[in-house]
Length: 210
Ligand code: GRF
Image (cartoon, protein in one colour):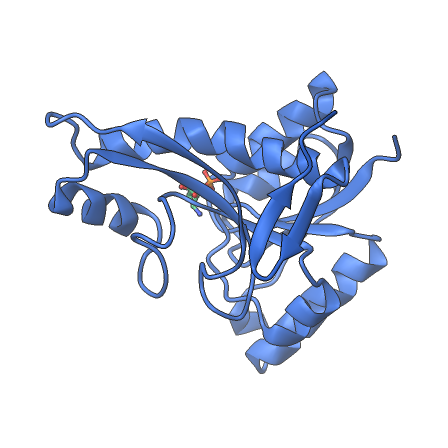
């Protein structure tokens, strides 16, 4: 099978990126990471990519006159590297509609909750798990979805739950969910690589292997 060319965007530690790199290396992912972009120069995800000799580039907002210029430069590089699927792995930048238009249902994001709960504007990183804790949720989980103009609002590809115990604090919840993320994101990428994902009226149909 032709390996799907993916570009990964990161802002932080890049543990989700690492789960993709591990999947490629162990042969469970029919993909190759051809480019890694970050909107923060100290994103450790960049280092993870450099260790594998993957082209990386930083796109800090302050280095560009406008956000549009920054995003246009990012899109140009994604195209230059032949990226077929854009994966937001802990990326905190907002994806502009012109980039979504260039990659229709080809930009995916991993969110650390069961969307639409604890998603959307203001819900990122620890804030998500704080919300879960404060509400006294008995389950949480992770969601992989296609990126649309609405933050965390695109068609849901995969979700997986995890039980929350009374004694779980915010960081315990975060760690439980992160373990799920590291399985779910590569699984979603593999389904896309195998052409088994179809979006019908905003809902995702997964072709169950015959
Ligand atoms: C993860 O919880 C991810 O869901 C969120 O950012 C967090 C950090 O991800 N989007 P990573 O360790 O940088 O991959």
